Image (tube, rainbow, N blue to C red):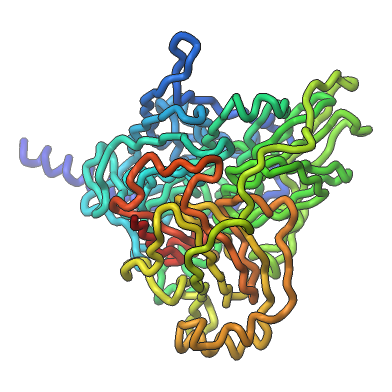
Length: 569
Ligand SMILES: [Cu+2]
């Protein structure tokens, strides 16, 4: 009898596990049925990475978990299973809590994986992927834009599963230390596990991280700020997140596709939300947390954006624009002045084709982002847009030690469908070729041989665009590069002599991500030192497991547009 009971129990467990494997399926939500602007924009909870002692901020240790829970993305959509960051299951949110830190005050975070044995989204074991031998979803957290020790940088192979039951080959510590000694600004944290970045972020593992420096920023008297984390998703009618279950080359990669695009646009965890604002200035820290979607933001009534920062760094002076493009992972720090608006509401809209720049035009749905409902009369607005902000050494004046070529390739199958993408014709596993000196500044000539724009992100370093040169006879050059994989031997100088295009004015400061136009050679200064002081890094940047640089279209990064970056002294 006991044996029978045991057998029954085993069968039950087996059936449970099998049913657990089943990923969401069925019919997609008809987006025309989702009414726009019915949910209020949430303000994500704040977690403080410091504490006050006798009026002075001192360092603090935090524990932040990753939880599976249900999240309500829209009034008329059933709750969605997600992976969410938070201090508890109850308080975890999509996006996760905003981590507030103070310049120069260390924050230590123990990231805890409380995720279930299996992923809620289909992933693809045929691309280089972190795979747990038993059960468990591999995760590892990267603070994007952070200048941190390699052991706390979120190396793709430093992953861990629930309770640290299993760890990746480069895992070294449970608690990450963030010194916060860099320039003040907007960063964001997200998962970075090998081959799972696109699904782990799609499931919800994203959040904002802010470094404030009251002595530098106080005198600017900028308006109070609000993060706006923007991403696109599609949903099944049962509320679960849609992720394709079949790849574009299913015989090679069963589920991987080159780009994920969703039907609806989500801001701070709500589909097409609305935010009630007063007639005054607001500061928005806009983070594009989409897997692959670019946005070209504009207000339908012509209201403008005043950029005060680009990615994590302030600009030397404000730059006013009517429209601007954001690639995945880019951050725009903008001021919007509602004080003189003659309307009761304004729409934030998008007209960027996908893939960018020459893909499908936007439709009625993915062209809408959110609505600002403007309440009341004109307020006395104490906030200012100062004529100058924070000036760092300009990218041009840097002392350059090395120039290197970085080439972006896309490979296709016999049917012409992309199978994988590489940087410099190499996979991630091949030894580091970008070996850079701590404290140095280099020029990277980035050659984009593909048809799409790619956002290049360099861990640890800061980027400054010099210019973009159009390639002439690009097919001839590409043929040579596909064969030789060597810009010098292929005489790049004979091809990089088309039109010279300058970066947009609001993108001429120090950045963490630079958009690489297709068919262009983009010259970028890469600095491996602080920009706000001459001090050296307060950690050993040469330690293992080193850093990485990669395309921030997550579906590209996973397969495998990412390369190791090694620092030496
Ligand atoms: Cu890419």
